[in-house]
Image (tube, rainbow, N blue to C red):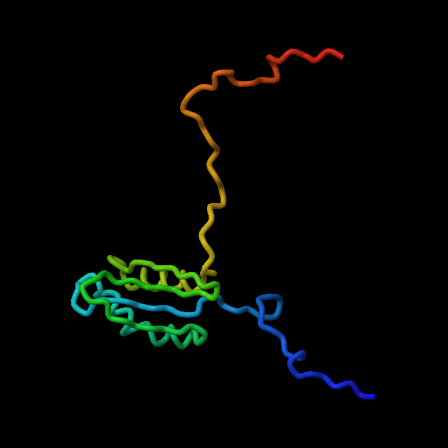
Length: 140
């Protein structure tokens, strides 16, 4: 007897691992003002560098929106349903490219500090500082 294979069991879900890599970013939204001088470098970036960047990253949806009378920003939307917003105010075109690359390479996870500062008290302890040198030896 031949067993029947159900087609749904043969397909696999894509996942990051040894053989595949799925970028976590889904969408980039550029928001800028057509008239404000702080958006001049953003407009230059959009005119000269947006199309090659879109060709290099076909997995990312790119949206350009006008945001009148506001500073330019870029929003990155990720697969884990988080988003990151970066202001593009006072950035040169190369700085904008670096911020876009930062969003493309990011995972969308919340930024966690890698090293925590030790707790230091501003007042002295009422019991003093313990030292093994000054402690009495236990008797057996």
